[in-house]
Image (cartoon, rainbow, N blue to C red; front, side, top):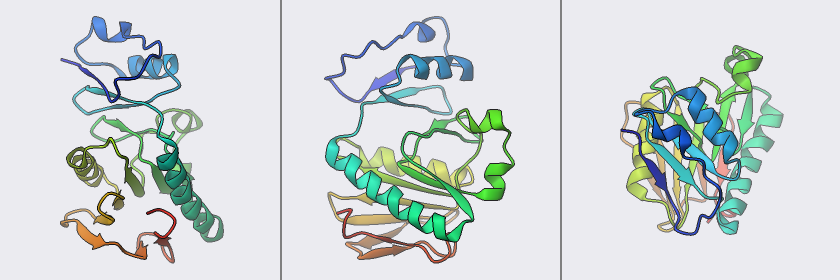
Length: 203
């Protein structure tokens, strides 16, 4: 049965739950309508139909998210081989889950292979590269599970940044995550040639 997880006790927004009442699993159309009804929130849908509603990020997390996306964007502008997406973008993975990484990058040829309609939706594509930044309210176990889901669905490189412990977990398919303790930078080659994520402004 579809369930709704609200990750805050302070949400007072008009969340329309009517789409959840008569169905055990929210369809893609219902999910899109639910998101349109609540544009203030980031909303994800698991492969099993569970919907997770997340409030806007706290200011410090939003600041670090921007610095991450800014670095990727600066590299991508020079590299000119792909498209960068911020935390507001949602992607529909092959297993049916719709997830929103804090930052993502997709190779140009893969992105351009999508139709304009697909690009204007929760695009049916797994990013080549994703970043998740743990906020003060995030469960580390939940984020680790999310990273494993990315890897199982075609993502080639993923970074899980934990500011609490100053650790970065580097994920690649079919490999255990590599744990970096308080790194000055994270080398994202060969997946992103020439890109190193500088950590000084992110900690």
